[in-house]
Length: 92
Image 1 (cartoon, rainbow, N blue to C red):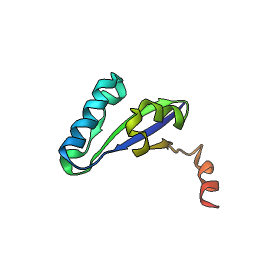
Image 2 (image 1 turned 30 degrees about the vertical axis):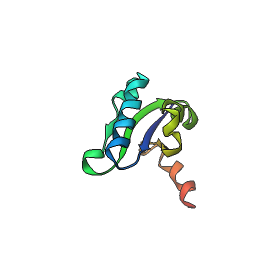
Image 3 (image 1 turned 45 degrees about the vertical axis):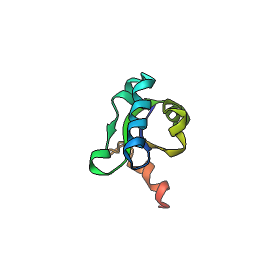
Image 4 (image 1 turned 120 degrees about the vertical axis):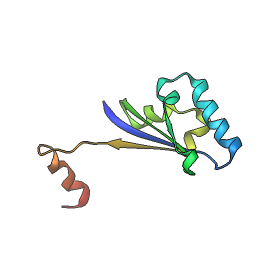
């Protein structure tokens, strides 16, 4: 399994914030009901972490109406044993 950061954006108005938060809570998903929100600081996004098999599976956790506004980022912890895996990503 891989670890992903899921970022879900919504419009910057009270109605959109209320709708997004309500949609997350209504899913009953532990991940969504424990999302972190940036709305109070003007960053109208929610974030949560997920250990799951693929980006596609991660995106399916998000309510359908918000999937077009979702970024799924695979996360990696680097250490002395896997640093060589980074070189091909940067053309070295």
